[in-house]
Image (tube, rainbow, N blue to C red; front, side, top):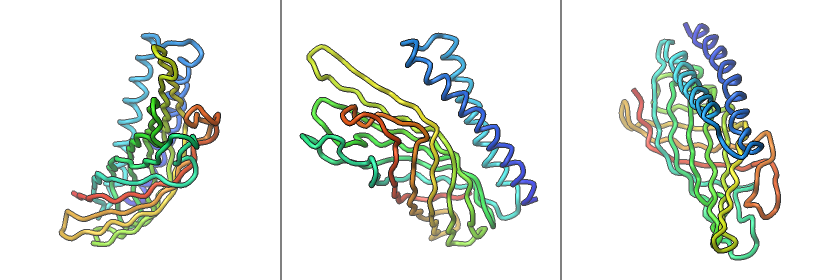
Length: 237
């Protein structure tokens, strides 16, 4: 049954890859047309719904094997390295706190996870400028150790990376740039449980986009590339 779950998860990843590509095509169209039409908005909703369903199917595919358990981890973390710093050398203060949650299932030798993260002021705090980075990743988990209290595992996956920059450089003029890209992440994590169902998780992951994205609009565009470390409360069921 473990192999069956793994085969099903491969199919899920193939579906996710197609839907991510379709979603990114729809999200990028407004950059050329200047607005999101009703048809495009509906297609975006449909793609997002399919990705959400496929993510749950991936979790369930690994929940089928014996000893696989579901988990949810709300967390707080810090982005560092790469682009996670002040893009402007003037009037900028570093602030790289991130918040998010992971939902997945983990068995004796692997699992699947969907992970959401939001980082406000990812590029630093600058007067008159708001910025943020959002990621939605679907990951393979390698390792785990079944239902043991200590569960180390590696993470690798693909997903959506969105950077938003908005500013008011001139009174009465509002500028906003939002860029979407398919990205990848890789890292390691450890979950440790104090009781049968409650514990903590610590992890460190590297993120990178496949296309160039705006860096606060001050230095131009480059691939979004950084590290993230988090700690959170782990609940398994």
